[in-house]
Image 1 (tube, rainbow, N blue to C red):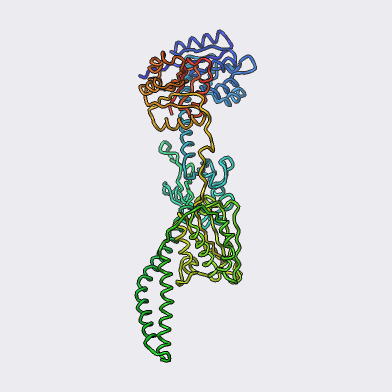
Image 2 (cartoon, rainbow, N blue to C red):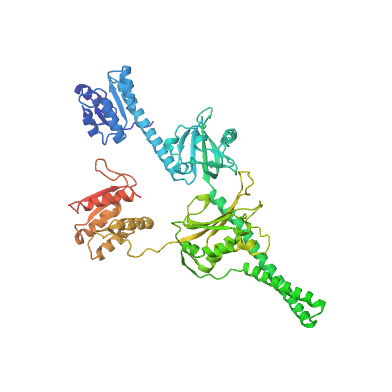
Length: 633
């Protein structure tokens, strides 16, 4: 048989005889009466330390029992059971808003008193467990990198974690109660959803399978601003569980993530493979043809020398020699295309180079194409080989001029690359070359049609970008207008790492160190984190892994020592040893469990709250006072 538990009970009753009678009955049941008070204000003051409160509803003074119960619940999270001789509906309805854990009608019977206390304490424990589980759930959802949206059985949003808020553009407060399909609209192609929401088919399938169902690969999220983002994820049902007979579905969980960066990298990989393949093919062909062309040119020169000036064979031999010389130039170009040149990087301003090369780029483009240069205000600087960067600009312009519509425009723009823009990484400088295509092509960017300069230009540009740890992509945008004016446009985009000037050593002087603190902490990672944090706030932190190391540090230190922070198991030993050498040093103990009514720092404290406690201790006029802090990191 389980032994009955004993609780500290605060009794709030303005009738003295009734209060004494209830107190005697509580003691007879094995409980302790921590205090007997008669007003709501006294009840709030005496609530600290009580396990449960028995509260009379009708009390004299400005604060009645219901208001006092609300205050106690809000401040101390202590269960309150109401005691009253009035059981009319109006009183009960008003009392319900205070969320009591029981309701006893006077006169109080011992059995009812015992049962009400036991049930109230049990319900309070269960409520705290639910609150803690919800706190765990919120912390987990908030820390997830993936977006999570939870909807009830009717499809209305209940929860949006921060990642989902960031992706969709909706805050959780705004999304509460709205249809999930409106907050997280999904589409196969990224356009506005028009009755073909993938959720309409995936949710029933997930309920049928009673398991998570993945979204289709082509699914895109249409954000609140109308932008389409490729996403991957799953839809899973939420059921009541085996504890209920029906195990009914009470909602769904949509888990999704932005894969635009990964798709962008996949596209980069495919394009880079084409460029590298073209480079290797060019180099291999050049090596194979070099020797053959040398033989052909040599023999053609011998024929020219041997035949007479007026021989009919001389003209044919001369043509063979000229063709061989032209072929050698092509093979040299192909061989150079497949080799990377050594780079000499230096800090450059892309905008300045573009302005200087404006006339040259116009010449490269030719008379039939206009070149417009738009330098961005915040493009920044890069660290690159100047010659190779100039070749990059020439190659991009050459390719664009060779495929641009006659009389068209080549627009060259610079600026910072925004993180998340079409999957592009941040911290890069962006060069974009846009032009209107003259004809429809299956792949207008990376399929060389010949070994001419305009056909090999993009592969050259790719090699230069790769050499500088950058990225290169090309996007063909079709003509959706259907007016026949042009067959779409192409945008060539190069991302190169931005150069940032190193910070000077004296740029940000740390604050002057005002106090010295000795920290005893066995975990190295915690010591390192606190060391940086405390020094940033003007406190000199000495570190020790145990009591022995702390005592040795304190004894050899010549300067002042203001405070020691140590676990309770080490604090007493350190205090005893340092009592003679440093009698005025303050001690901040770390203990596992708090003592009531002592104003401890409760549970797992943060570095900010510990700093606040340390500063309060250092400001104390009595440095030898023993302070107590509760919890661990």
